Structure formats: structure tokens, C-alpha cells
Amino acid sequence: MSRRIDNHITWDTFSQGLWRDNPVFVMLLGMCPVLAVTNSATNALAMGLATTFVLLASGGLISLIARFIPRQVRIATYIIIIATFVTMVDYVIQAISLDLYNALGAFIQLIVVNCIILGRAEAYASRHRPLNTLVNALGMGLGFTFALLCLGVVRELLGAGSLFGYDLFGPRFQPWVVMVLPAGGFLVLGAWLLLFDWLKERRDLTRC
Amino acid sequence: MSTPMAQPRAPSTAMILVLTGIAMLSGLLVVFTDQFTRPYIEENQRQAIEAAVNKVIPGSVAHKQFLLAGGKLQPVVKGAKGQVIHAGYDRDGKLLGIAAETGAQGYAGMIYLLYGYDPACECIRGIKVLKMAETPGLGDKIMSDPDFQANFKQLDARLNPEHTALIQPIVTVKHGSKQEAWEIDAISGATISSKAVGRALNASAQKLLPQLLPLIPQLEEQGQ
Image (spheres, each protein chain N blue to C red):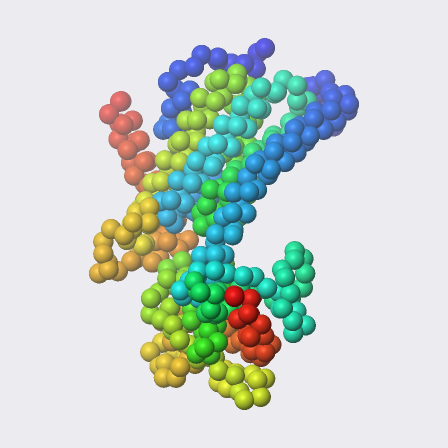
């Protein structure tokens, strides 16, 4: 089949999402959860892991059955598969912790429309073998989790003076409230993008 | 469609088969997950209610749920209409307080909370926010601010002699101006959320307490 371009699993298959094409810092995909649920490191981690699971499970299943899906209904099929795994994650998070479930709110259900997942299904999973897809999805998921954590850690530190719920600075710390508000999400994301772009530019310059 | 390089169309049957098959598989997976997680979720919800009741009726070790409908206590059944109340008892079965849910419109959607009423002092002994979407860092302080929580250690909720309404309605006052036992000191910077808490308590206490008072002896008996 000509659609199957490259079936060798290399380090790049995995690291593509983790670094080179990081879904948040490079592709700027899935900004909605990135900005909305990164007001604490715990929320960011939970959201990242939930998304990673959905990426892995839906990617694996789609790449297994891709050749049986008629082109005309492929998007509908992907959405059903993604929605199924999101619903499963939704139940499992409720079973693990109601507090976490309440903190993440509607954003768990909204993983269904996260463009990273549909994007990977269409661009990668439907054209590669299950094993490649799983490795690539794991990289993408971890890259997404890493990016969420980058934002969540900074926002929680500045906005609440704590990390993963543990108070770090004591009662005399005056929290920078705007950081846990939506505006803080944009500010911190902007700062991280600036840093990553600067790093990239420096690397490109040294290569020349 | 008149695309020149039209791909060979898959027959409709293939599409229907694939979509049906996927939908059935997904239904199966969801049902399986639901079956597997339901006991854990129910246990979590029970624990959350238990912890909330514990907080608003300090010192209670045993809880019983009743449905208050038509001026009578009834056992709780799913889907029945009426106000659910939680009676809290100490180790010896003595009635310590009654917890009930209430809610009011806050700054960002409804604030739902549970409050505990102590018939001995005719006062509110504690509140616990169950669900809200107030602004993080400002409005959500109604959950955590210790000064705000201190308002509810002994918030006056006495009924008038005719047992029709509170003598003094519960009101939220501006931060730092609380004078009376029935006033709630607002959080500065979260006045709207604080006022919503006051409104929710007042509305529920005005309505529920007159109905509840005649039933106190009955509730005391249930603990024995």
C-alpha cells in the first residue's frame, strides 16, 4: 500500500510529539484545555494523562481498522471511537476522585473535540501500523502533558504559592491571583512560546 | 460532486456496516466501563456527602437521611419530590443537628451548599460548598477563607414565637461591619459570592426551619 510511508520505528517516531512537533509549543493545537485547566499542576497532569490515554487508545484502534473504513465516513468513525474512549476516561476519573472530576469540569468531555486527537487520527494513525501509531501517540501525549505541566506549575506557583497542592511559600506569600485566572493562562503560554521560539532560533543559528 | 479524480465510491452498505459495527463496539465498551466503575463512583459520592455532613454537623458520627415532604418525614427514595435532610447523631444517638442543601445564584452560576442547623442553639453550625463555579482566587474563597467560615460557627437562626419565619433574616454585610449574630461578614473582593451564600441560607432557613421544628422530637427518636 502506497499510503504506508514509513514503517520503521525510530527515536524520531517517539520524540516527534515530545519535542520537535510538540502539539502545544510547536503546532499550537488544543489550546482550549491548555489555557483552561492549567490553573494547577494537578489538573494539568490529570488532563495530560487523560488526553494521552485517549490518543493511545483511539490511535491504536483506528490504525488497526483503518483499511476497513470507507473514506466518506472516516471522520464520523474517528469521532465515535474518540468519544468512546473519552467517556471511559470520564467514568474512570469519577471513580478515582470526585474532587479531581469537579476541578476538571467539562474539559474531560471536551477531549472529544481536541484537535490533537482527531488530527493524529487523520494524519498518522490511519496511515501507519498500530505499533508505530502507539509509539507516536505516546510521544504526542507526553509532549502534551509536558506542555500542560509547564503552564500548570508556573501558574500554580505564582497564583497560589503552592505546587501539587503543597503550600511552598508560607502564609506571608501574597498570591498573584491573575495567574490562576484565564488571563494568566495567556500570559504564561505567551512567555513559554517566547522561550521556545528563542531556543529554536538560537539552535538554528548555531547550525548555520 | 464533480471532482475529476473521484475515488471509487464505497457502497453504502459498507459505510452502514462500518458505522454500525463501530457504534456497537463503542456501546459495549461504555457499558463495560460503566459497570466496572459504578460501585467506585457511588462509594465516592457517598463519602463526599458523609464528609460534608460531618463538617456541617460537628461531632456527629452517625447520619440518617430523610425526605421532608408535606410536613412529614419519609424514607429517601430515588426520584421522590421533597427536601432531603441529613440528621447527625453522636455516639449515644443524641441528635446534634440537621443538614440540608440549598443554593443561590452566585457570580458565575449557581452556588450549591450544605448547611448544618443545630436545634439546641437554634443556629447554623457550618456550611460546605458542594458545587460552584466562582472565580478562582476571589469568589472561590467562600470555600476556604477561615474568617468567612468563622461566620458559620454559630450563625443565629432563631424562629419567631409563631414558628413561621426567622426573627432576623440572615444577611451578608460589607466586609468588617458584622455586628449581630445573624449577619455574615462578606469576603472583601468576593462580595457577590458572599451575598449569594447569605441569600441561599436565608431562603432555605426561612422555608425549611418552620417545617422542621415540629419534627425535631421525631428525629431525636430515630437516633435511639
